[in-house]
Image 1 (cartoon, helix red, strand yellow):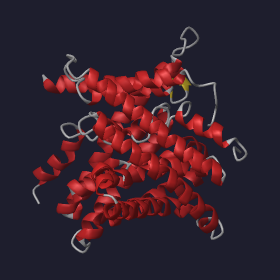
Image 2 (image 1 turned 120 degrees about the vertical axis):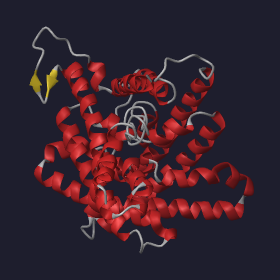
Image 3 (image 1 turned 90 degrees about the vertical axis):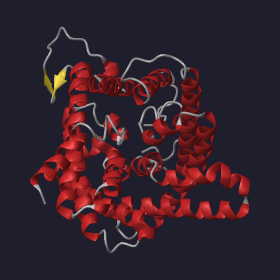
Image 4 (image 1 turned 60 degrees about the vertical axis):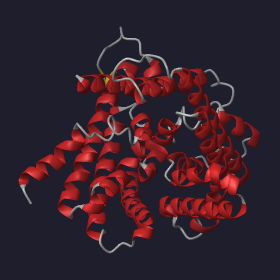
Length: 197
Length: 198
């Protein structure tokens, strides 16, 4: 249905109007636990952008050239998760060999990414919305950038409120969720610009 | 096996070790599917089914699975049950299946399921693991149902699709949109944790 939509529109739509974290709630677990520091947030965010863009592409190819011809669409959950896990493992091994610095910066985040539901979620949305190959890639890339933007903003805000006195019971996840809610309100201001869902 | 242990296994995930508001796991679907009570109940039944049977299956196999590929086997066990849920929903409740969209498939990456397998089923016999999986699922379910109840009531003025408030009520549209989900869960955690601290 959206097959002929402009890739650029999908890219910006995935960042702002349909932010994977703030409007689809995906990737919350790592978002809540990692957003304490800007440095780690940046590392995880960069890894998410990379893995999301590539695995969406790989899953599109596997789904359209393997699963559909064989009528095995119902196996997509298993296949997608295996593709993601295998890709992450591969990247981890390559980075370890090629660059010590990059491994130190990104390596520890890669295993976390396999269980980040945003990665699988983007692949599933791609199937539901019937994106073409190019659109899927831009959707994956845009969603990754959107996630990066959200976690970076959250880490910045959490740093500012670190010294604030917060009501008992609301410290930690509670206040983070309220901030996320306000961010979601702000991002709703973008809706109407582009509609991708 | 003492019955006291069974009761304790069953009760802990409902309150003190609740997966949602204590361990903050499975938040994605907690936020995403709670805008309508009907969808929420279908979704939580799917999660209870998956987490119960995954823990049970993994516990039976726990001694024969090599440590190196443990995670992979866990994922495959979960995915198998999620596919069953997906196919059953698609066949019998196509409308709700459509509305839940990718979130049924995302039960695979729901940290509650794998978390219980790792933390409990890996070192306990199948019977106890079954109970632990079941009560973790129920602990997740009742939190979602409470949140969905208030979100649907305030956001649409209805419960289970039936109008409750009548014409004078103007809907809080924000409650069924993303920000409402975040605020509602935060308020829930606030109330529960505040009470627990006392």
